[in-house]
Amino acid sequence: MNHWQQRAGSVSRRSFLGTTAGAFAAGATGLLTAGCSGGGGDESVKIINTSATGAIAINHLMDELGYFTTFGVTAKVTNVSSGNQVLAGVASGSADLTVLSGLIGVFPAIDKGMRLKVLGGTQVVSTSALFSGNPQVKSVRDLRGKTLGVGAVGAELYDVFEALLAKYGMSAKDATFRNVGSSADSLKAALAKQIDCGYGQVGNKALAETKGVRMIATVNDELPLWINQGAVASAKAVSSKRKALVKVLAAYAKLFQYLTTAESKSKYVAAYVAAGGSQDEGDLEWQFINKTTAYSPTLDLPTEKLNFIQQQNVRSGTQKKVLDPKAYTDLSLRPDALALLKQ
Image 1 (spheres, rainbow, N blue to C red):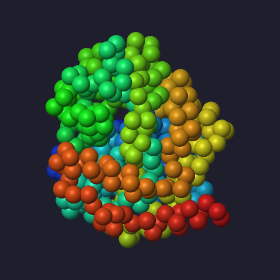
Image 2 (cartoon, one colour; image 1 turned 135 degrees about the vertical axis):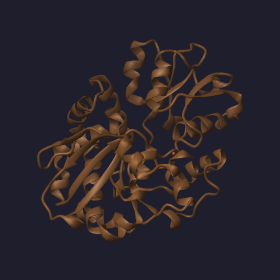
Image 3 (cartoon, rainbow, N blue to C red; image 1 turned 90 degrees about the horizontal axis):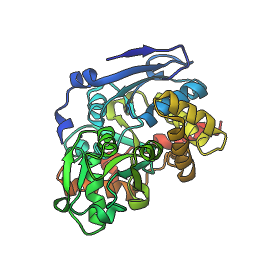
Image 4 (cartoon, one colour; image 1 turned 90 degrees about the vertical axis):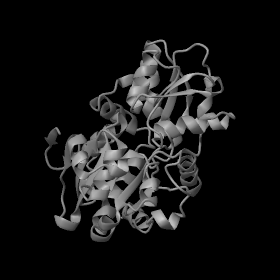
C-alpha cells in the first residue's frame, strides 16, 4: 500500500463475499487523507472508493474546494483497485463509507448478510461507454458472435454487457465473454484490438481515436436505467457516526452541485489530469457529466434504477431476488445533509 498524507484540509464482487479485511488492506492503492476543522471521534469518517480516474479526480476537487472543511468534518479517503475491496472494507469496519464505487455488488452482499445501508445516490448516470476497433461493429446490434472484454460473472463489467445484449434479443451465449479483468483492462484490450468491444469511460474517446478505435455507444444512451454509484455505509457507522456521515454527504452534494456549473470545467479538467488522465479526456468527461448531471446534487436514489441493476444480478445468479428498498436503504440522513447546504 502506498501512503500519502497531505496537509490539513486536503484530499488527494460473487468472489468479494469471501474477501477479508486483510485482502482489503493489501489491495489498497493509496491512502489519501483529508483533515479539516471539527472534532475527532464522531466527527471523523473513513471513506473508501475505487481508484478509477474519475474517483481520484473527485478527490482532487475536494482538495481544491475544501468542502470537508466547510462542513466541519474530518475525512480520510482510501482508494483501492476494485469494488470487491471497497465492500470488504466497509463490511469489516476498516472503512465507514463508500461514495464512489459501483452499487451493483452491494445487493448480493446485503442479500447474504452484510449489514450495509445505501444512504443516497452519487453517480446516478453512467459515464461508461463501449469501444471497438472492429469496423464491422458499429453499434450494440453488431455484437452477436463477437468477443467482448468483460469481468467476472456478477461484476458490473459482466452484467452491463449481458443487459446490453438482452436489449437486442441476445444472450451471453450469442457472444464470447472474455474475462479480461477490470474496466481498464477491457479498454486496453479494445485499444489493442484484441477483442471486438471493450468498456471504458466517455472521456476515453479522445485516446481511442488516436488508436483507430471508435466509441460506439454510451451506456446511458443504451441503458438509461443503469445507475453506477451510491453512498453506502455499514449499519454500525450509521448508528455511531450519523452526524459526521451527514456532513460528508453534504460535502459531496455541494461538490456535485458545483459540477453542474460552467465554472467547474477548468477545475474538473485540472483534477482529471492530476488523477492521471489527459486534458482532452477530462474535457470530454466534464462535458458529459455536466450535460447529464451524472453526479446527483440532491443525492437522488431512483428506485427504478436500483431495481434494474438488481434484476441483472438475479439474471446472472449472484442475487436471489430483487430486494425491497427498506431492506437496503437508510434515507434518513439525506434530508439532513441537504438541509446543511441551505445554512
